[in-house]
Length: 116
Image (cartoon, rainbow, N blue to C red):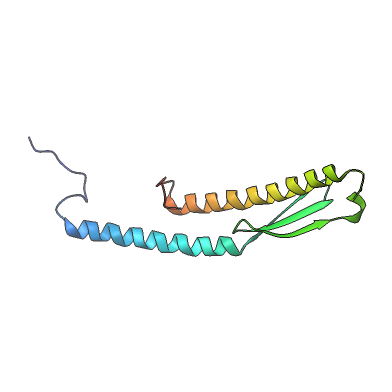
């Protein structure tokens, strides 16, 4: 009894491998394009009722930090630090989530270590 391969498999040999390599290259090019677009995007988050605003880039770099003067209290620098950290971390999470979502969309849910 011979084992049967699913339709579209076998018989092609090297041509199937070449086709697979072309698809992988096309997917890599699309991922590179999306990565470049994501790195240029900006993500904004606020904390403390908009008292602190952080803007980060898709490269996970803090671009701007805006603090409203009324929240600057020399007696409570710790609270201001907490607000800054909260806003920056939320903006970074938004950037990371967007990148993850875009890459998952491109890869069709494939989880290939080291691919992105």
